[in-house]
Amino acid sequence: MKMNWGKGIVIGMVCFMLFIIVMVVAMFSQPADDYDKQYYEKGLAYDKDYKRAQQVIKDKAQPVIEFKGAEALIHFRTPVKGQVTFARPSDRNMDEKYDLDVDSENTAHIPLTRLKTGQWQLTFEWTANNNQYLYKKEVYLP
Image 1 (cartoon, helix red, strand yellow):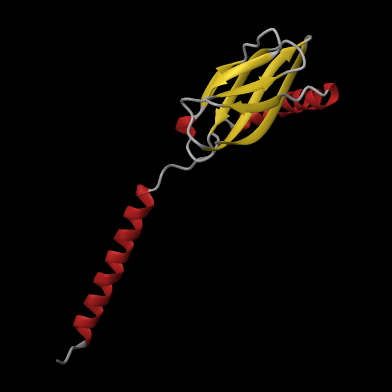
Image 2 (image 1 turned 60 degrees about the vertical axis):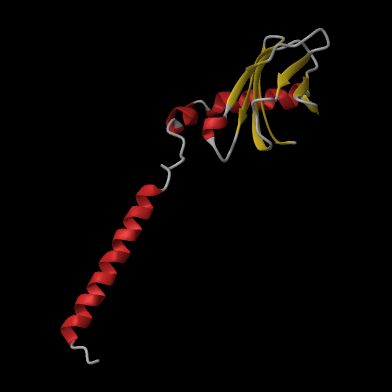
């Protein structure tokens, strides 16, 4: 079968337009950019966060994290008031915040029943002895 130039150009243009349409549909079906929409405010507060993180090192106040069954035991050196955030790097919708209510042994009990197995970023923010602290740690939940 003999094909002339006109049919070849039309077929080529149709294939190119289909390619472009497929790429546009694929681009719009991707999730939205996962950037931090409050980067400016966090940039302004960086010095405050840095000082709180340095206070943890200075006072040797890093919490000890232990996993027992369906809960996380977080041991502190002194009584604390604050919160811990469990952030899932792969899915922001799974993030959870818990208050740090410590018992007489300065241990907070965090239930893990609502959290899935995998990689988590923990952010501890607490106050103790009139000092503010910030501590971050990556963990793998079994």
